[in-house]
Image 1 (cartoon, rainbow, N blue to C red):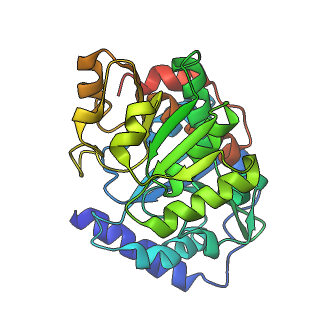
Image 2 (cartoon, one colour):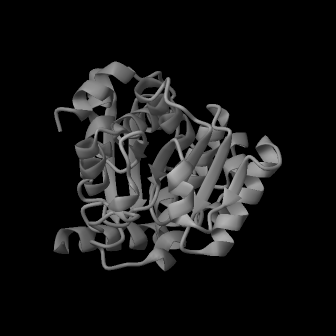
Length: 309
């Protein structure tokens, strides 16, 4: 941890020192070398650095990917503006952004891709020509996993737990994939309402609703998606009482450390069809790699490497 704290302090100090020298570090090197990082909380088990660096090696790129874990560094979300600025000033090509920063990072950016703007969350920031450009690759990542793992699953009514940055991307992916009605449960009612309003504006009135009665919603749901951090190694447990699960339900997770969450364990024991977080993790990384490097990534190679980690 002392090494991590020292590294973060160097990043912050160097970022301040070079605040007015932003263009010195990046010339044409973005096509032959990449320096990227991941900002988030409790991310020491993340497989993202290894996926990016392995794909970079396979393509002959000098590719370095660093974790910036605000928990391990004894920081909090209030440090986000300084961390983003320092990474940009120190010559990072870009950053991935994860819980709890995917929405908090938006005011710090100069531009948003159409998808990121529509979803209202960012998980990838590219530094280009002195600007910070926000993208969302989570939506594509979940959509790819859903198509591969639950292609023929019924989708008349789905319950989603969580309405944060990842939840917003997943909700857009679900409705784009043909889910007729999405009920969103969230511990912060205002956040849930904001997401539902956004979804109904994009997909049509009545497609999404704020959940009020979880047992009743689960009793008639075809599927359940957990987009909360509950189930991660740092937040063990399940996002809802497991007694609400039943064999006819399909259950999807976006967490991948651990890959087998308590929710998925209970669901599989009942015989539910399940989808773990691996495909979302890989395919969001595929797109982020392409945004950082300007090169196409080999998705199958990245998936194969993910499962060796």
